[in-house]
Length: 497
Ligand code: NAD
Image 1 (cartoon, rainbow, N blue to C red):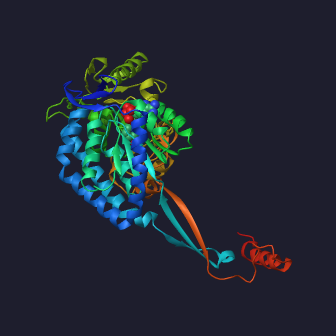
Image 2: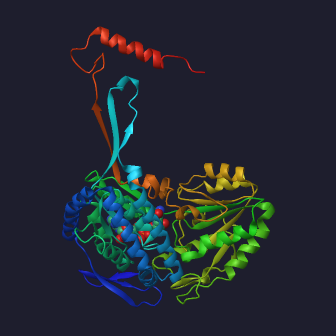
Image 3: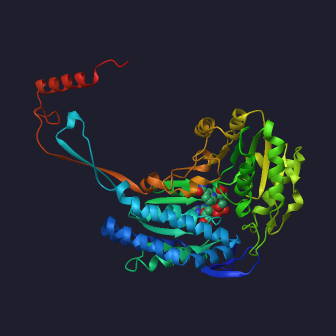
């Protein structure tokens, strides 16, 4: 975590011990503008480098991250308080994504011929996806490597320069990511970091970059979008979630309980795609709840090597978690594991609450803590209907013994990603796009869609020969037009059954 100490610097603190991890400058509007100006020049150089050389540099960046995995993970551990093993896991995921982006950028974005259609058969058509220029990335603290790299790696692979504003809680991690990039791209500042609080992010959003990739909360996304509007800067918004987990009557209950407790409690529940609501079909409700509670009771937060998860990174989140627990219990909820007393700064012990009304804060708002509400439902249909009753729509999970029913439910779940019989599995697959609907944001990172998010389509036609009729000329005759209409009639005029 971090606090501002004076107007020009701020410190990042270890949220578990309160120790200072680092002190960093607060970059103001002028400093951000200067970084963006340097990035503009670097972007041209990076674009001119071409697909092959960029691929090589990015694969070498991946190598540098891999060789420094423990160094980066240790800093993530210090700045967020999460267990070292979780920080290592985050690095593994980020490295996998960087590798995919580097290897697939040309295939997804490079020039390709497009069939022109009979009416334009004399045209050779080329479609390619060109870099936007400079991409501004604004990141959160909860996964300070994996989350921003979902934009940074794909933006760089698409041929853009990047200016990254990491969260004020994890500035050191952001700087280290850029420092390691600087060891493989020494010529130009293709990937820079600006540090500071919200105002630094706001300056980046207003700086005239070619796109903003924002990851954070919905309220901040609205401010960033308003700032982007000043320059018509496009934006991708990866925001919060209130993800549901459905347990069907024929699910493997042991596996479901194991996945649910990990999805909800790992990283102290500070996961955008974390499990926050569980809907269980009534025939297996008691058995599932028993297993879930047993597993949750065995978990212990702490900062030591054996701890299952760490502290709440952002102190301001603790009263929100406490309010959700109290509100749920005040409205008739029953605490099966933990309760309001589980909130012990800076830690929150596992909390499971049942019988919580659908309109309580713990069911409607993002809690971002190691808490779960569990709901009894008639069948999987009712589970889905309740799962979809939210303004968010990031991800979700379905545990079912029936492949076809699970697929059907997954398709109808109002979310960008759904994982069947595992939790958060989509995040580990670089080829799959990642993003939400509604309050959870718009646009996609990861995969081919994630590469295209940081590129603009360019269409080129080259006329190879003259057609007998040229209607795009003032010399066209009625006969030319009649011939064209005759052909169109033949091609498109029939009735379809
Ligand atoms: P936040 O919205 O408080 O901050 C995110 C970033 O925005 C930080 O770098 C912050 O300094 C910056 N910022 C703050 N005010 C700004 C402004 N006015 N203009 C520009 N930038 C500004 O979010 P957070 O607490 O860092 O992260 C937690 C949230 O992020 C949760 O809601 C979580 O669900 C979400 N999240 C989403 C994803 C996803 O991929 N969808 C991933 C991780 C986290």
